[in-house]
Image 1 (cartoon, rainbow, N blue to C red):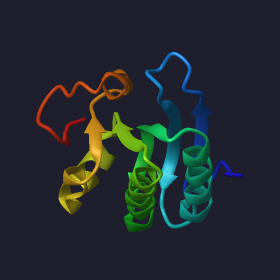
Image 2: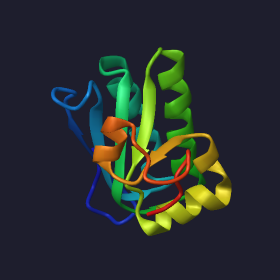
Image 3: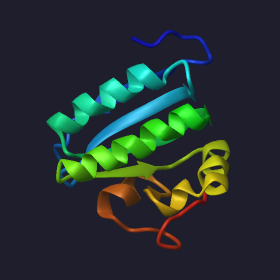
Length: 130
């Protein structure tokens, strides 16, 4: 799977039990071109098993266009499967990229994992805050 190189992202998955029906995938590292293909496949598998998914972005240091495409594609796939995708706790760097690209207007983004589980946003409908 992912190596410890700075350009690789790693994924840790927890089951949906006791989390409002949501499975949680915690990403860390660099969400970029090097990690995008493997991450796309991992998220596809997760969405087949648990259609309601929260992706914890708090440990993602950087995201480029390839990484953002994986997130957008995963959100679309979740909806096609009758599920949902929520992004949680983006790091300041990732929050800036989500906002600058306008992706924050198309994906459900929450300030914390707990807020994503409960569906409560601390601020506007699509949060771009840390």
